[in-house]
Length: 293
Image (cartoon, rainbow, N blue to C red; front, top):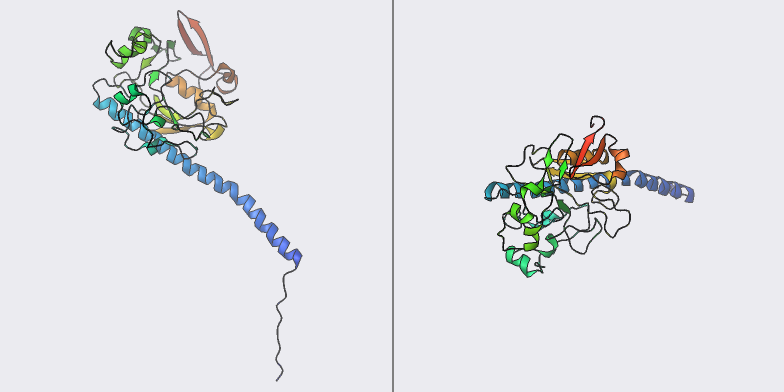
């Protein structure tokens, strides 16, 4: 009996190259989609973190006799030690997963003055990181604990911190503590529970956007390549506890409704052609030349 043997024909080099090319093409097509999906997931976690920070501040405002959301000592104070760990139990909440920022839980506050106020405070919670790529210690969010003034906003609201008192007086500090802050008189007004008329418009925490620092081209308070989510936008948490991902075209409108100074006028022509400002009786007056979108 004759046995017929079938020999399997090997792939040719051309066939192998074609298969490799197809696989490479599929990877090139799928990787951006996968990367976008991963970023959407990270953005969602970031939004949840911002909401938890706002929740911590809201609980503080409800339970503290001062009604202050966060005892920030100036508009540039982004410290989360004001609410950690009493209202914000986990330091990990302060990190956006889209960034390289870190908070070292074994590094306490270095300042003896700050340690006296916040004995469980952490050095890396006292300030936001320089940018999303900063892995030297610092959290991922800005805390806007004050209304910006002296200003008049498009809806007619006047923020007059000079009438409200010094920083120290607004914080409820005794005259003997931190004289620099007690003597400072500025136009800003601290955000207190009883002051907030429209919590759905009032921001408190948002993706870190320090800007104007050592990184060339980093724009202050405006999403760009150095921010947690790049130039796509910012997660902004409002005092009614909702979080909105705000795209560049909407950033200035959100600031105006929250009684916060907008970024530089150089951006207005493109992103807020409806907005103007002027100086009047010691106030910066923001007004619209056409309805805000």
